[in-house]
Image (cartoon, rainbow, N blue to C red; front, side, top):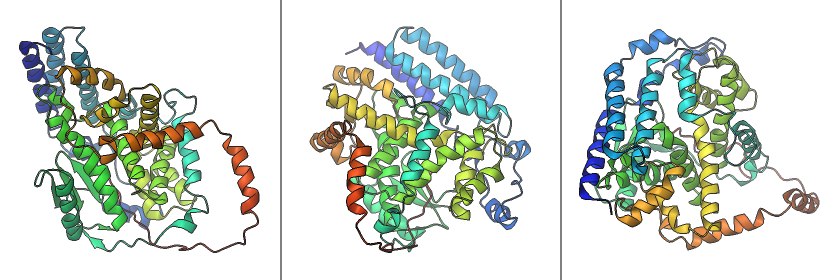
Length: 447
């Protein structure tokens, strides 16, 4: 274990970063009024919303960009001076500080052409290639959109009605949070300030007062916002020295959102429409990056059978903070698909490389995949505390090992030939109507 003086320096520097980032809230700084959707749809989706650089300038930030940027610069210099240029934990801390410096620049340029440049620095682009592969995220997103739009979807869905109001959702989720975490450690409350139906931050889940939910929506909220986002925050707060692991700069967004989607899948909480919406986001980002304006992206999804409401939502998520004429947009929404793929590949690789014990470190705090080997080493040395809150399948890795083992083994098969074989059998089946047709499905939107 490192000497006490080093650990105390690490803690002091880390705690300074936690304090500096506290007022920096990206989504709050770029959110749109909810009533804009009504106005936009009333004009048949053919007039750009009344959002420009002046709109964002009127939405004052909760911090002074000049002061915070300088404080972050000073902190980065102190990390180098007090921990040394070659210190591995110091390297992660500096990378996180640099991310927040870019965030400050991103928010300075809300509604301006430079916004998209800083967004790509932080989150990447839909034209980025998947790590270790030649396919772009846009190509993967389109493939997933196809899969989750197949006719089979209408043959397997159960009708989930949005019959649970906000007050009931708070009671249900609070009970589930108390069952998973220590009782009283997580708050669930009604909010009038969020645009999405629900969101999580720190140790609190906020529920939009106007929202209604299905039982399936609440299952997604439980594992996505609770087990992953809040769970990793609370695990980060358990750290005695590396306290910055409790806060999430954009460098950890893909792993966080990808793990949340993976947990939805492993717990059978997700459903095809939600998976389709997540895949649509990658396509929306790419269209907007390539220069399509807000109305063009909106109509792209409308023409593919997506409802007016959902078409607006996926488009609004991409254009918030940027320019409505395209090119300069918010690229965060590639993180869900990108992170899902990278997390799955990481877990499969850890198993095949004989180091499955590193997998639970995904929950140790707000981390990237590149951080994990070092953090695991420091965990073995006693500098990093292991995750307190872990989903059951990550506590006992046997089932996860088997699941990913079979998945890896089957990847050698020629799926096209297998599909051709079974399609001949299915072709003999009589045509049947969808079991549930256009039943109401869970449709909540989470940030």
